[in-house]
Length: 380
Image (cartoon, rainbow, N blue to C red):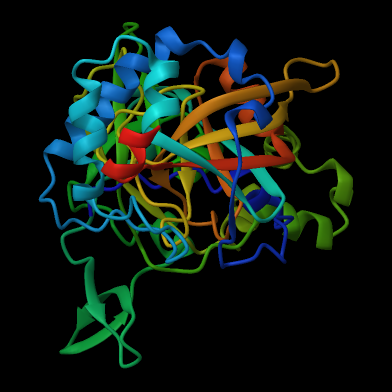
């Protein structure tokens, strides 16, 4: 599997995601004049992003299914984008191009937004000193197979029988030691835990160099939100769960942190990624993620490549959340991103990106930009 496992988000950490997010999509056409902040958008920065999307779409066979609900009548297949992408080649103004070739449709439900980022973590490529926590590559005996119910599951073969793969406690206990799977070493198992939640990260080496590691599979065990466990145990208040509060609790209880983290049996494996560090990691659509422009969606509801207009508020600093109205692109998926109106915003890397992603859990509006069929765009 080469897809990036996107952030399970604050909602997954605390188990506080909306439980009633509709799985079906209802669309209503709206005008561009109904989009708050549309005229103030940075259209100049959108042109290279649109061209990159079209380049990616051109690499796919025309019959490729991009995903999406059946409510989306045009835009679910790569071929549906051919005319819009051909027109982009001679377009000079992103606003005129979008208004000509795309029809906005309001998602028929209130949107809910969370965020994810690419963490920067001190690490070493060799074991020694403070660097004692291994980052494991994908084990050779980890395989995928079809269960009796038709679902694909992860596990391993044991004496001819398919069995669940080792859980977090077993791996922490040395189940994979001695196999040469270590691709780096971290200072803390808490760092590893949060790296696994994000699905990719930048390892900052002792000499100042950087190495990116990206998702390369997981053990197939269920994900159990740590925040929810700590609330149930009376260790954190229900309204006080965040990435920071969970990390602070773990680091303040070194005698209990391993046993608490091991109550989440899910375990993520990585590969070294030699991609351009000036860009974000690749998302599931196969494109480098762009801070503030890439989102993870439920692919069964929203297809890859779809432009989305987002109206919400972002938590910058300690002040009140700031109004945020921008065009983004569906370029990733997330284990816990399910249902209509759900999206996970990629915020980039660094301290600000971490802060925004860790505290973003906001409602808002979502508008899908469906490519117009050729006849409609000609009339427009």
